[in-house]
Image (cartoon, rainbow, N blue to C red; front, side, top):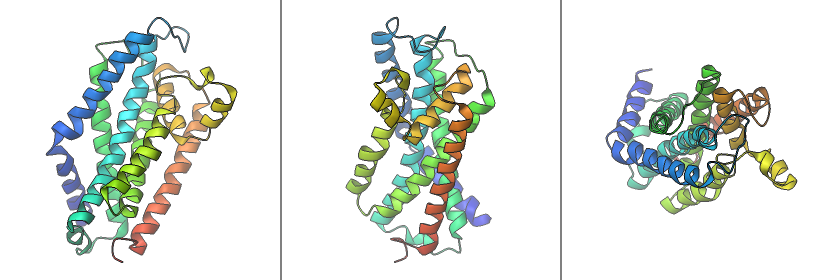
Length: 251
């Protein structure tokens, strides 16, 4: 496991050395979202009984930050290594594809959780946040960040240029995140869009995460957990298969 620890440590250092860009900037972006949306909609929208709109919004913004930054970590690391040619220094050591996967996924999860915790701390000035089920909060945050870390590995392996990775992020990750109920409950949507939202796995990550705070959710948290766990297993299998085959890495 020495190879795993070394690669894991290298991935942690990679984002921590530029924490102004990788941690503080997304925290500030999330706080700006909170300021704007809570200022405009507070007092006009009530999603759950007894829960202010600002309090409703905070878990969504925290989870959005966790997911986007977990994806950015593994995907940007891989594409940078491929473009600069430094990927050879990762492929030459006797690392197994499982160690490769665990190092990149866990480092992505750490970055996502650090950014999410920073967003949560910043938002405590705006609302009192209950914690109905802290373990559910931690479980969905950890699982969601690992899913996006695995997805980032797949995207980083597939992409050959930065604009291909940007396309993956802008046309898949971003729409799925913004249409997942971060800013609203899907029960406020027309029937067609409400039904379509149930095919978005990001919705279950955010809805289950929000359940940990309020004890209320749009769908059963057990359903959300089962779908999130299934997504994690499928993406893990796909990422491991790509790493084992050496697709676009060793070929």
